[in-house]
Length: 596
Image (cartoon, rainbow, N blue to C red; front, side):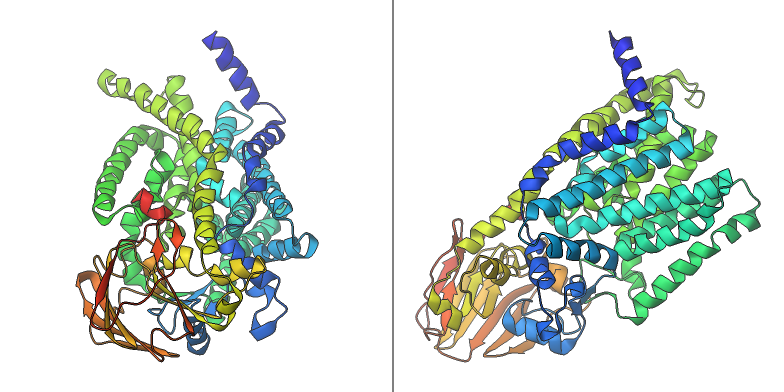
């Protein structure tokens, strides 16, 4: 019975129409995405993509709103679209114009149908699936190894968020063009297919125009030249020159036109801050590899507490060491395995510029699954590369079955139920925003949010959500202490509050998005906003803000202010304490704190 199942499985993996069959399966597992609607950044993207150019905001500025313009940033901070601690030169601008074009088409063809927008993303997922099958078969031939690698890559849970979340479609488009670029290059170099010499660089350009993640393509081009290209070393290098020209043009345009990240601790610019990037690279790379090879998602490196993160790094180091020892015999004997392994490791470089997440593993997974398929087939078929020592050899089946369980069972289940985690965060945001006042009076008031679990998830999208729901919203927001820790709120005078944060302003996993640790706030620092001055009263170790004073331009009871704190049920009305008195507020908990 087992033999018959294995034979049938092998036959399916070598079927001529595997790409079509696998695409249908992958889309079927992802169908719940059709009904997930808009989540998180999708709301802001919708606002921008439907804009008519007012205020200089055009649809193609979806990924480039924050270009480091101090005046524009100051306006956003005053309005509450950025938190009060944001640096003036804060910049997050990404070169993703091909992806923006696909989103622009959505909002021109079916602007009121998120279902059709998600169907569009599923189409890209299907194209990626077919592309991956073609590429693996190009390198392995129509073998079980090629089919297994394609199956494991496509059905991995790391594909879930890019497929489900419209704002992350850029990962799909970058992967499609990157994989096709590698396929064209290999056909040219090993199959003498001359169109590949031109098509490869063009596809690389589209990958880079889709997302910075497209840089992962370069990792595999380099690995291909090292291990697979049959020509002389000089000709191998010469074959990469057209790709190098494309990369150079992209890199120069990227810097000259002001793209990149500045003023954030979660994003690191490898060119602008090379030392910071190199310092964070090992730990972030280790967590990403853990997410690629184990059931533990790389996202845990962002949402766990700091103590738990240290434990996670130890687990990652041990796991990587075990994996390296197990793969070493295969890597020594097989050039193809070295191609996959080196490509996988090199493709970590661009994604370690930001915080770890499984959704970043599009290119890492390409090499990871190629290597994994070779390893599994080799173990179960007793390949020659297996060690001769009985003791060492006996360990391989157990590891192989653990990897089968991880990537053959847990991975597909994660893809099928990936909507749950994305919806969990998105619906938590929507539920919180639904409790924000939206009576007619709010349109003429400042919304003062005393506390919140997180600024990015629970504050930023309030105006967009209210606007798209057709409800009034405050033209200006003041989020005082959006951090998931207990607060002591003391009234100093008729216009002033002191807030002490037991755990600090930056206790949440995403709080450092808006400020660089290298430019910390210190006791005595003042931030002047319209009708509000914030003074840092106490700053602790690791750049934490422990207490701050908030001086308003009007008495705190003024009708122009609408006060709300956060409790477990959402935002509720709040009355500032009398002068000389203080109130204690429990920690504002959000969905991310459940993971912590």
